[in-house]
Image (tube, rainbow, N blue to C red; front, top):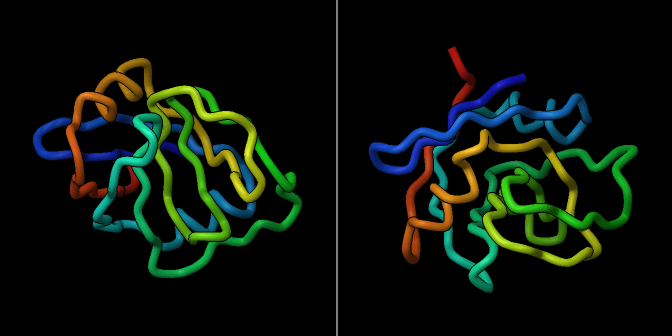
Length: 118
């Protein structure tokens, strides 16, 4: 399942895994999210509807380039730096090889459009 993540003129392609959380995200697309920087490792933005966490582990250790969901905050997350394992993180998939660099180069708050890839 592929998605486009657009930040301004830049587009990063993501590949979602086949989880209940990812399927719930796909059902909400397209979305426009206001995302904020946290800890110089991730951009997060609230989703309008919670994602299912059925069969998801209680925590995850995301890598730069991962796409995630932070269940306690109902946030869509794009990881561009090293985040240690943390309860409530669900890995939804990965961004293409330019993803972490592209997201990390966007200073401060950004508006992101997430849609299904054509």
